[in-house]
Image (cartoon, rainbow, N blue to C red; front, top):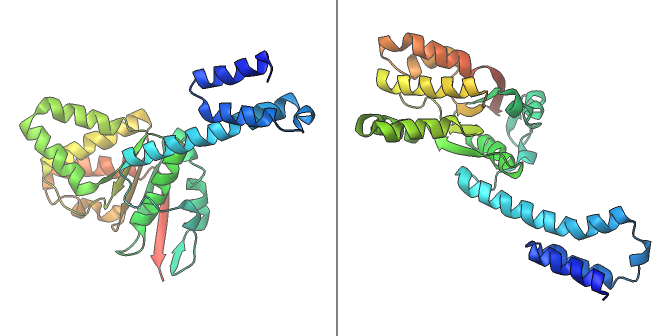
Length: 244
């Protein structure tokens, strides 16, 4: 090994690119080395390091996301096996252009239709694409925010800001419980903050938007806020899942 090639391996190691350094040493022993173009050589050295780094990053993102079903895959989100999707819309969602466009994704279906699986699959792929996201249970999220709003205003403000600034917020079982005006006010501020930032929310629910007025709250003082929530959250894509 020449001094020059030795230095390259040493530099890769020094940069923490151990996998690339190992690959570099392997290539030096390849009798076909002289046939490599500069571009091919560069790719051969960096590819295994890149794959390793991306896999570690994905695992970190996935852990942070609190995805419900970490084994869920977007490849399964197509009509068949007892479920029917509006496949054209699903394919649009899976381009992830909705993220930069700030468009929300609503996933609708009856109990047992596979809404949580769909949400998890989209969340898991978002982690692979290196988006900062979290998947939250609707009731747990709302109850936590309500509790903080009554006990510690500073912590409540920080938590609301934290949820507002997630690049993608996934909400499971949206609208499964009713809340008083205090709860709906919190939800309104969260939805409005994310809309103002053009950050998308992906949610699943068994209730159509026309039902939200009675499903989210039975407090007559909430009408304006409920309408504001509905108008903002339904700006985007509608995924329909039918269990056959």
